[in-house]
Length: 116
Image 1 (cartoon, one colour):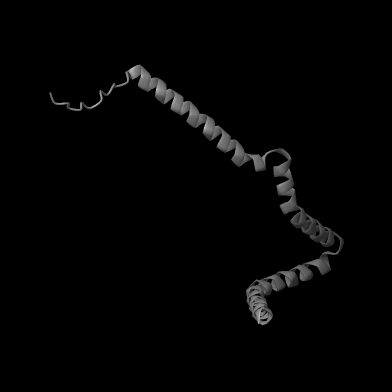
Image 2 (image 1 turned 180 degrees about the horizontal axis):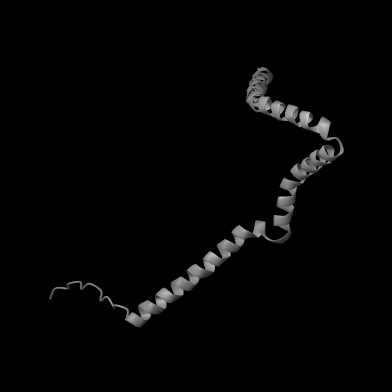
């Protein structure tokens, strides 16, 4: 008598069992997706969104209100001043990267000097 090992019998689930398993998996995925969505939207909810927007908009609104006030009070002086400010901003856009690179180089040299 030889003892041959028989492969274990595979029981194929019924269509109803497969359907129930898929429904349970879908329910778990929906729950996980709902939780992840809630976590993503949490920083934007309620007061946080209002606070974030106001923090970013506050200064431009103040500057705009000041410029508008100046234009209403002294229109002849304000327009040339605004034109000069725009020219300075244009030059600043060119100069700021150069200044930043010089400052970074100075910081590196200072760090090397302190490391010695």
